Length: 134
Ligand SMILES: [Zn+2]
Image 1 (tube, protein in one colour):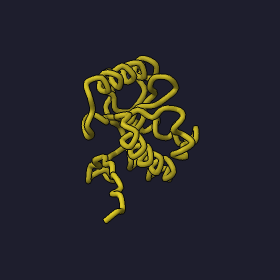
Image 2: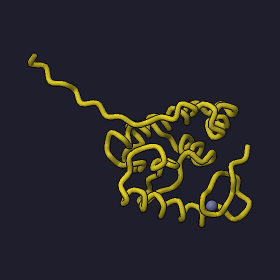
Image 3: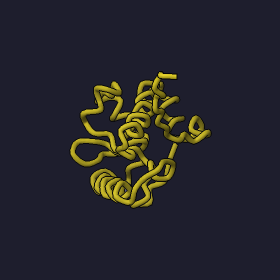
Image 4: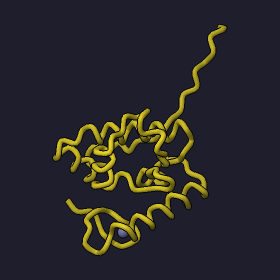
């Protein structure tokens, strides 16, 4: 065969994603666009070897609007990252990640915690102890 094999890139998806409280909140609030963007970003970040980082130049390609981004942040699926980009929450728990990528995500998560979690903000956070609420 002369046809070149197409290389396929993969990310892992938790089989229970649909019952995750963050996705249930999106479903309850009919934020289906945001869910779509989450999965597009998961693929984009894996394909481009960004290990959970979504730079601003990816927003157009995956179709993310400011509203989608705000919705993903509100439920804790994304958080603000470096250089106007975002981080996919818990990437390193599910996907391959280098130590450098884990440190980058950790820095961004800590900064987001300092900025947004002042003891009253709901959402999951491994730094300030806010736990997931419905
Ligand atoms: Zn926090």
